[in-house]
Image (cartoon, rainbow, N blue to C red; front, side):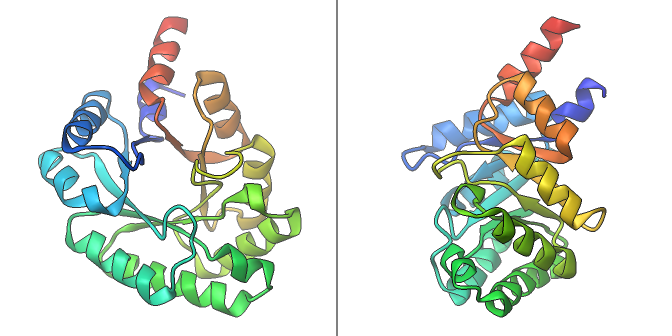
Length: 223
């Protein structure tokens, strides 16, 4: 792997509830300087980040139904459309975890299909967040099977706001289930190069982290 390949896997993240415009300006400048793939933000910051990155290849990624996933489908659809209208190139939405616990698989498929359809219409990348820390292995597999059918661009391990983040075993399980149909994003707790490489080796093709700069610097120091 080359350094640029690693950089292009990183979604540079600031999802803090108290982040201000100056924080988003810094986030966007860093993402552009380090050639990261995307800035991951809450929807309220979409427009300002799109403006900061107007002349940059860095994508703007809005988090939908975040971090709990417990909004109605209509709310998630509105959030998705609004974020795209305001400049989002990527959408990361949280599934309705309660619906999964209740085995409402038709609803989860409907939710995924509806959000992914909007993303496809506007040529925006779609990512489905499972929040694996709350799921059993069979529930992770079931969601991955639904994703294999619907074909979002990515399925994602975590929000980073749950009780734990990404694990290599979860990434491996998700990737084995979806195969080549869908990519996997690891997020939550990826703070150093060793962890990042473990996720990549397990099958992750995108990494959500607020430690992207530290990871890149660690790579450079080892060369």
